[in-house]
Amino acid sequence: MSRRQAFFVHLANLAVSGTGLVYAWMRYLAEPADEWAVVNHPWQPHLQHLHVLFAPLLVFAMGLIWSAHVVGKMKNGPTNRSAGIGLTALFLPMAASGYLLQVSVDPGWRRTWMVVHVVASVLWMVAFVVHQVRATVAMRRDRRDDGAEPTVVAPIQFRASKRGEGSFQTDPPDRGVPKAGTS
Image 1 (cartoon, helix red, strand yellow):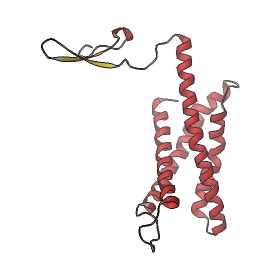
Image 2 (cartoon, helix red, strand yellow):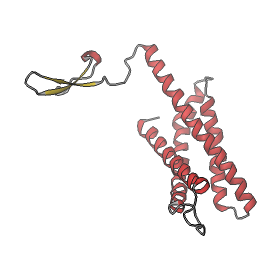
Image 3 (cartoon, helix red, strand yellow):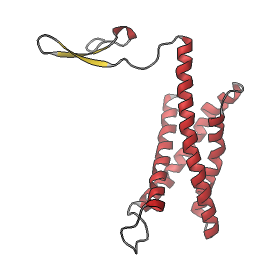
Image 4 (spheres, helix red, strand yellow):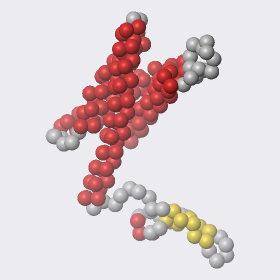
């Protein structure tokens, strides 16, 4: 998966998860300012609309992940993929219940789809974080095992000269990162 695709996947997930979490807080935890209010917060309908508008981006992102990431991982043979498999398994009930929640009229079905959507979405967010943490740890371990230099940039320090002028330099200089002011 390219960096642009990964960025899009993370951005879509952040947009949908963020608006969903804030909307859920407004809908289920916030107290209305007025006892006769229809919504608990004035921004509640706007957050719901944003959540519904961002959701197709996540569906598209899942298509990107499937073609650029999942299929390739499946061809590589068995490894520890529990978080990735969990994400794939959670996506269908999360997306389908979100859609069905919007089109259901019967209060019983709306309640059912709401519960399925909230549970699947919370599990999705947890699995996504677990998947990212595992991938980051595995990538760092592989780089360390291969003897490759980590991609972490050396810390930048400010060094003052005797004349009171200063310059920013990296420390240690042998990490492959050029010092400030040099190319």
